Image (cartoon, rainbow, N blue to C red; front, side, top):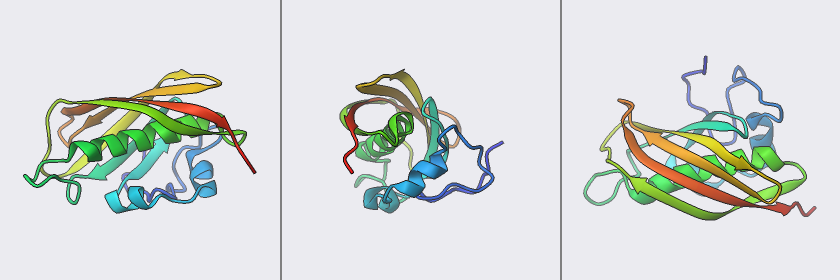
Length: 154
């Protein structure tokens, strides 16, 4: 069972299940991203095959008060990129090369939960499908992110 307390992007609750590399280990080795922090994204659990994170709707809306589609893309890219990094770290890094998103509905409050599931984890490309849902479990967005694997420079 996952700890219901959200974690900051650079930390995961100590009682979170450990992956082979461990999302906690990876995030501890990387600088936390200012955009991820500003948007309130929290990584709850993760492996290269499946990552779960949340983001509040509040503070991430467009002028009409609806969840901004770009915010959905940021959450999707964050989760998919961390999943790809878990697959290749520490020998390589993953950088986003393509993202597409279909927005099915919007939200005006609460938390958005994203689940990134690996489609392909290769030596040069990694792809994840990311499904975003609202507090009621309704699908808000379906995204696909592809990351290019690059050798890590010291």
